[in-house]
Length: 445
Image 1 (cartoon, rainbow, N blue to C red):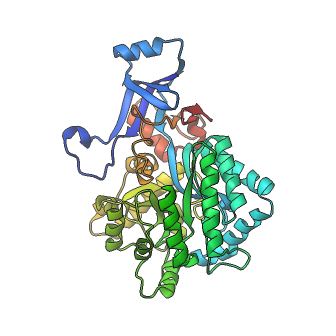
Image 2 (image 1 turned 90 degrees about the horizontal axis):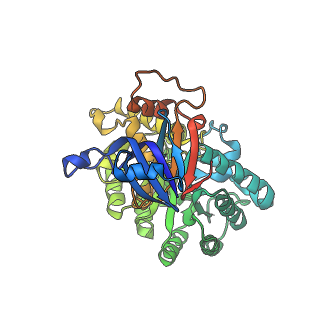
Image 3 (image 1 turned 90 degrees about the vertical axis):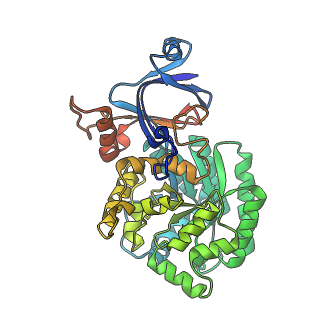
């Protein structure tokens, strides 16, 4: 058992929903002089340090004691709801082409190469992406792997070994793909089921997630078959939806009578709770209402959207319409694996969108809102809002200790308030400010 004594920052609910009473209006909290007790992998108590229980806990020498300084803050771990592990090798490059060309030129060759050496090249790559994201405070990653079963198993093994909470998806693609990187419908279904069984037997905090790449590369038969597998195993689902103009146009040419991506996923049976779709830049309001009705969620990837989407995702507006939204880095379409950068880009994107709107409040989000998307928002988007994303009793202890004085990237001043320090971490922070990382109650960084 362990005890943390110091400052806590977290959200207790979605800031984009109406409050029922005055107490609920304060969705975001910075709590000073707080004691957090952790038993095993669960938060057992969150109490003021001056309370009788708090005094007893900080004096108990039988517990592992973590005393935070004035520049340190305990926060929920970041939840990256969309990243492509096999693309990590070219992160920071390849930002020069539209999406469909980008996939052909960079993505498909890079992903297919890993099948030639899954136990050396792929494992080495996956070790590095998991190490990097953990160092950036990402305690949960929602990963696309490749279409190859053995490569995907290696990613699951690495996440288990590194103790990162992870959702691992074998990418499914049975049409409109290069000859060297395509599979039959039956192979995609069989390998997906095999992966689910493999990941479940790992008995860890790694989970399977059903992963049709996107509609252009997935036949209707494949989509419906994956929905059946999701029913059978009660699995999460992930894909891309209405991502870019060229993708939307390609889908329309393949399905001229079937409507939007949302309509196609709906008819296939893939819209449901525990389903999360990346980008969603070109959704209509009708699409949003359909997604919200089915309680499917969106992974907002603001950085890659700037490069590939030719559009903007209005987070605040769509969340007020009832859509659940988390935040994603979208490595390597997004050139940074850091959720700090993803949060900042979410704010910048909202400001850019607000400049083009008659009602700026439909679009603008703050650094606090972006922090919500990176923590509790991601948990709710994954259907885990009762387990992750906040520092409350009964929740899993996935947490990060940030230190604004660690590293040389943030200057602090005597007049800085606790909220000033938190805002500086949000707007200036990076992996240099990550002091400690805990996943499922265990210290991993």
